[in-house]
Image (cartoon, rainbow, N blue to C red):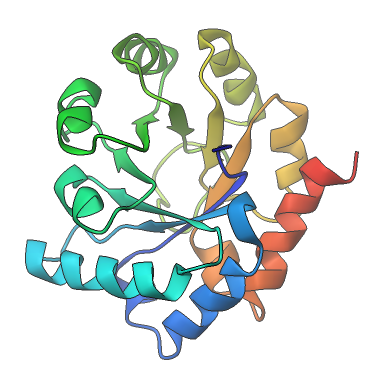
Length: 205
């Protein structure tokens, strides 16, 4: 499997949007080039499992990947393609004991964290905050130069934080493998089109 270029990340509000699963199905028409990240830090294990099962069904046959944040057990239960770990979550090796097949990503905010994640064997790095982000208004933007710095550790870098279709080109130019976004995808008039516009930065070269 090739790691997707565009990662559409959910949160509590996105998951509660009317017609959310219909939008997921439209984004999923982009196939293996995209991943849907199930993220809801407020959800109980049962609620997260229910969300995961619904997303797995919605993505069936599309080729689009499902990633579950923080919970390799939930990812394993629905045969997700991967898990995304934050700083306070399980280590990469422990996650692999639970999710036997699939990608294991790690969120990083510094070169030191990136090196540690790569040493742990993370398959990719979710690096932020790259641009000023409404989701994290107090977090300083590290800029595309941070992406370039992280590429030295060898793992694919996915940029998150204020990423828009217009800024995706800056991520690619800095050596980023791909991008992740919440608002720029799910709050767009056409989420699938927004994701496609991000993909075009890698495909029209």
